[in-house]
Image (cartoon, rainbow, N blue to C red; front, side, top):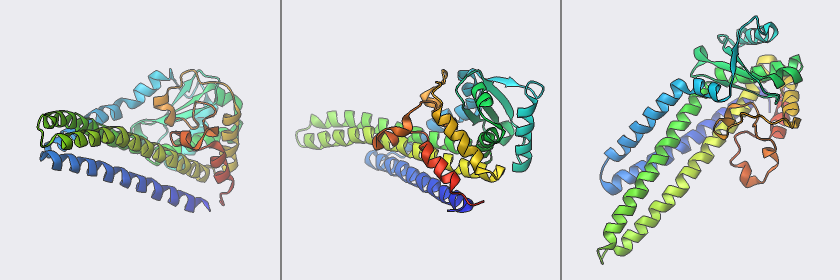
Length: 301
């Protein structure tokens, strides 16, 4: 598989997962609206989820940087890092993002921001100290690819979809519970009420889990895509492959690691996830490092 085939494959799989996501939400919403003969249920849930996610989208970068205790640096603070970022941005046709440093020994990095004009790239001290120039270039190219591929926007859309589905399932369960309880008082429809309650409970439990699995699958596909795009940017896949191996083999813990933000990093800040069971791997935010390195080294530039 060459570079362009790999990128095209990941894009197709991402949109396939998004399509499944939308079908699932529309199906649950349509089911609710039909059962209760009230289209307002779906409309209210969608408006509320979109509104809360809109606020998160506009302020997510500030929240993430604050929680990670990241500090902005200027060009005079780290001229070599700035030149590297600027050169890659010129090649990629992107505006130079703000650069932040995390006072952490663990090697890692992430990108955030609502769009290319308001983007941020953050790296740890450990990354700067433990990577050589080509490895650091590979990591920065990966993060710039997330910006260029509009991954922050995609992740926001996914948050909206998960929020909508979760709200619909909770609403369905509540309506099922009260509706089922009322029906249970009626001898003729008591059995139907119990069945309705069981269906509501099943929807409450299963649909959000499926939504979470789909969002994580999308996140993993975007990591493969950013790897491919980053390799295209540097024209040297080995730099990123070597960096990923160093990060995976480093046992230093990231003290500011937070499960809610784990998907942002170039590699999961929680060590050892790539070696767990197949079931646990479904809930991983990143593909196993071995798979990413293998794909990078198979690229034909």
